[in-house]
Length: 437
DNA sequence: TTAGGGTTAG
Image 1 (cartoon, rainbow, N blue to C red):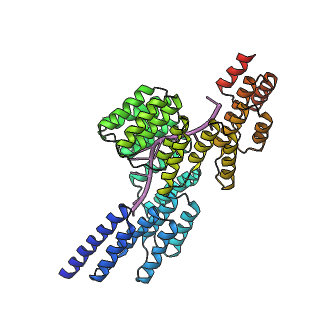
Image 2: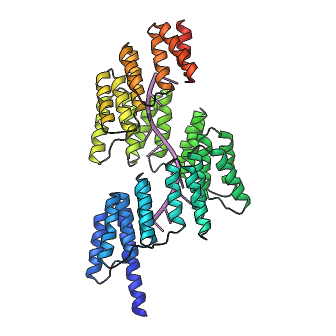
Image 3: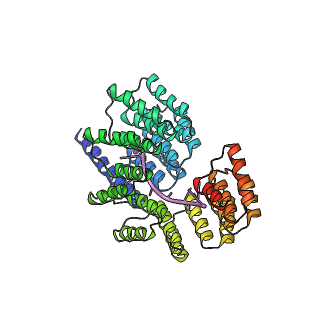
């Protein structure tokens, strides 16, 4: 009996060590701890392996996480529901939804019984895939299998509804649940406030914030960033910047979220100098820069016309092993064309299409605008016609540039055909037509 | 072990 207690304690200690090294991003140390444990006679258990699955899933890849199952088999252990939940969550985080569903099937085939969290994660996957009906089905599954939803189940539901364009339904569900004994936590309020805000329901968002505070929840960094975005969305910039100050005073600017939100707003307003001073603050405060932070900083360098500086950020990203996303590429394309190098911008856009990036429309719009401003309307028009996902930005920029180039007839014709097809032309472009007429 | 916030185009 006593011996069992000691073995359990030794394992607890081992697992705690492995967990903390994984959390710190140091998988090598985590593996070393396991080897040392084996030498001392402390064998890894299911929890140890599950911790490793999580670590490899977060830090390396889904394949690396899956490979841990092989090591478990070698050690004579079967994966449990936590092993599979971790793998499914890892696939979901990496947007590998097919893998997530396959892993769920594999779990059933191996007679591992799913729990609430398995269904929660699948619900999240369906919402990400914009399949709200299937997502909702997961709640039915939970109930029909005799399981009880956990608060997170409802948070995922409310968040998913908001992100799929059903903010009003989410609010209705929230009210209903609250009347039926659901105690919303800070995450519930954060997802609801964000959803309402993004749906343009700013009054409801602010009411939800007041309700959150009245319920005794203490706003955290997520709440503040969400509210800041809300103010910016309603063009109340000073109120938004005040939120940033409050975030700073409470020590909630430990990551790039607050600064990137504020920088984004300043750049849209054209307040470049103020943005630059925020950049200094961000860097001197030693904030760990991630992909979004680099994108934001590169955008600032481009807006300042300092392409060399943008190159330096790219080098730094490379050293950290960060890969470009659609934002990085769009910022580069837009930076190049605004610096007058439209040909390089086109080239970069082409490499984006070749490398299979699905969302190139913002970058394409930027190049089409650049071509229009350079008077190359034939080329701009050809690009427009071959472009997937032409939108009101594409046509507005053409209308704007045609009228500024004195080709008023063409501008008016395009404006009319857009009106016929229900494509909204932005106010600035309409105004340009009127001014030139 | 699993849920929430930030960056692009006129």
